[in-house]
Image (tube, chains in turn yellow, brown):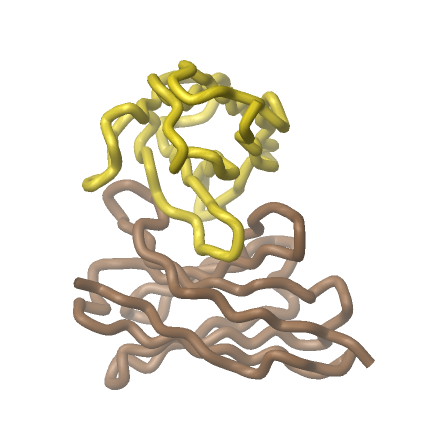
Length: 107
Length: 118
């Protein structure tokens, strides 16, 4: 099974900061890599799919990149609405798996 | 605009069967896979399984022996049954649409909290 890890587990940032979250796979994976934002008490929301494609309606300050075993989600300028938990998700061979999550909070 | 509305029993005793339903409003059932995902309190997301419009299913290996996902195309509804529930199955359960072109969950239900307790 492919294992997904995320770092850091918690990230403290200030408004306007550029922040990066990393998702690593235990072996090289395809580009079926997505990123989600989840706020307390709410369902996750898709931000990025196929590693770098921005979902419709998602602000352009969110971007994704990467290939192989390492993928990143970048928020170019952290906004008050961005304090949340972020998950990566991979699809391979009819199985979906999620990373453990990264909580972004206010410094 | 596609919306997913889910419901089901929120409190179970150990060994009982968890049963949830998710209705798809405002869009086509075909051309997509439809998944169930759960999240224990304070923890991360776990994929349970999926089904497409023709009834083809895929399940998480760790839950496969206890899970059944089915659909009623006439009602545009999918269902989840998880047998022999234990306290470890206590979680928020979500249904979600899988866009086949992206293999990502682009639309989610509101979630149903299920507690397994004696």
